[in-house]
Image (cartoon, rainbow, N blue to C red; front, side, top):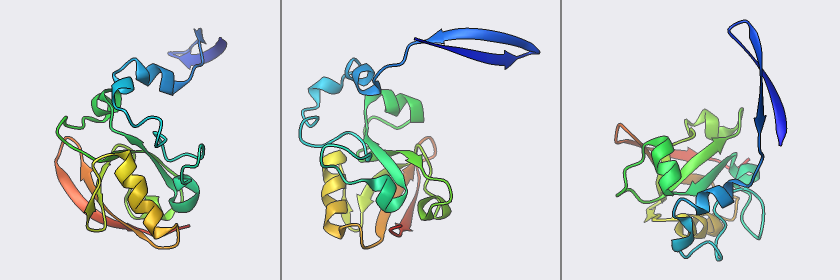
Length: 150
């Protein structure tokens, strides 16, 4: 438990917050039934053999889950992965990649889930640009972006 002091409306407010593991919270939102948790990490961050997308390309992704579908307004029939962060001053940011966009293809290959996404990224080995098809939730707009490696 941590104490956080806020300044709002000319007054100081003190609140208490409990820190926890986001993955545990998401499991309570239907994640345990997806069956891919053990083979492929859920995010593009470093760990358990995953590619470090943040280091290689300047962004991170997660599997589409009920929680992040609600958060970003992603329709239930869309496949792919959702961008969860983009490093400031990175080529990914310069090219227009933003948090909440859904990557549905890399090159000419559709990506239905996180496992497909990492399979396609591994083929490029972090040395070639990622050509990604991104979709914008709530507007159904889409664009193709070429994200060069860092």
